[in-house]
Image 1 (spheres, rainbow, N blue to C red):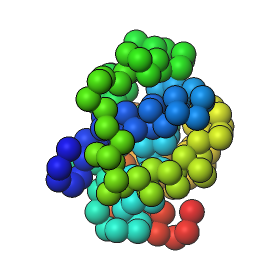
Image 2: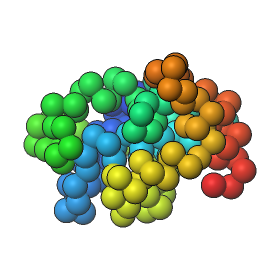
Image 3: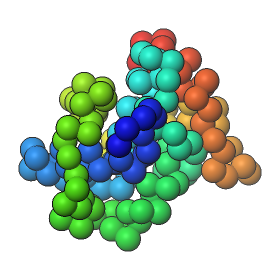
Length: 152
């Protein structure tokens, strides 16, 4: 997993593994919001993307389509770590971004998926990108960086 940025699936797998590690659940909806917050804070602090995929403004908030489609089979149920993680998952692969991911979990991980969804609906990056006539508009990295740099 050398190189930067990582893939959104890689980051999603870390959140799934962490949730299992602390005996918590993570649904696809919650995972999407954790990715949004991790990307936003990482952009604000480093000026670089945490993961390379775009985040889009969907009806239920920010979504990374590649991750959504990977886990959509779970519906609103928790993602099963034994299915989502393979035997090659290695915590050491995440050392360069571990602090960012832990900070994201510490701030947002205790919130329910629907609470995170509602929170993103009040924030400028999603609101500015979401239009009922223009589905799946990309939330630009510039918009994320500007918003999170303002101290969210």
